[in-house]
Image 1 (cartoon, helix red, strand yellow):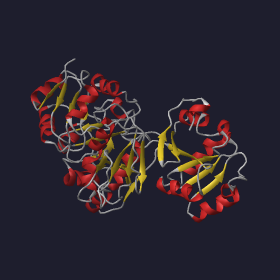
Image 2 (tube, one colour):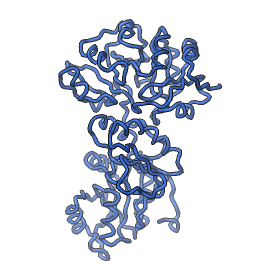
Image 3 (tube, one colour):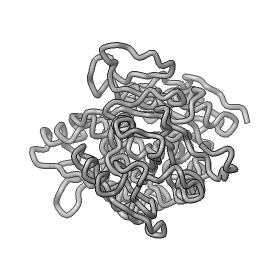
Image 4 (cartoon, one colour):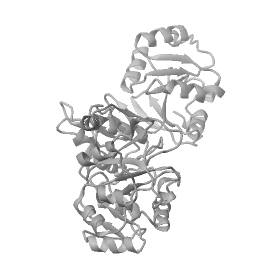
Length: 448
């Protein structure tokens, strides 16, 4: 199949009227669109994206009149928000009408609707007699596209048409809001902040951060993710030779690292949002092994950026040994990699050759440096221990004795933890990270 890229709205409408799936631009990200009232057309979206049918879609409409034409009732709060934010990056979760196929809402009683603020897509919606179901134009879980080129990389030869609308202005997905038990809840933070919404409706808005089953798009724990491991939440990301490094703002002295990206030159989160996905796409194209992203401030749209980056981040663990280190060098490594907690998996945490690494001294000194310490010699319970500690600590390192290679966590156990869903990084004595590639099972002579 040939994939055409054009600004021709009439051609886009023709494909959609035939029941095809095409890509459309919005102010947030590009969407993979089809006739939202056609079961067969919407089904094609799920198959193209490899998206679970349990993950509902957003219906895109031209405006409030199109919502009412679908038989959807609009409460007062919805009308207030429409008057202020539509067309724009705000999605409303409203009671579903019988006109909307069950596949759109994943069988749920509410439907997500919004009016995108892009001139080409608005012209397309005014031209069509039906709304468009349109999730982001990427394979399920991957980085959302903000240019037609991103879409083309994903779906060239798989869809017939991409409506070329330039680079998306906002750069991240819309805010999703709905009513539950008389309270307004934000189900997905986005471009429109909670504070902006509260100013319009004059009442407090809450955030629903967890749901056992997706109620709206974008609620899966792992989402918006690059193919490379991504580690988020650094105060000062180390300039690792095998990493793409993403900083919120340029530092006072520019780093010499080749693959450093800056999200904001003006020190504001809106600029960072507009550049985030494009930056992650660039990181994917670079000859690096992983991505380190600096913490984004939480003010305003920063809440949405943190949400996207935490969903994109890989569950990760670090490993570190002690027999090659002086205590000062060991602490330098922990500070460099911002280790917040140590799980000691040595069977005998007493070191006659290196007494400062014996458990009693180690626990005291780590505590004085603000690092949590626990001993876990029973490896059968290690995953449960990691899950518990990770709820309160950003970066966890496993400690073993380097002089005991047959029991060292860097090899067989690292393979097992990788199979359990963790990305393992070995902290090497020369102040460098090595990404563990399971299963490796190197011979002893090849081990670090």
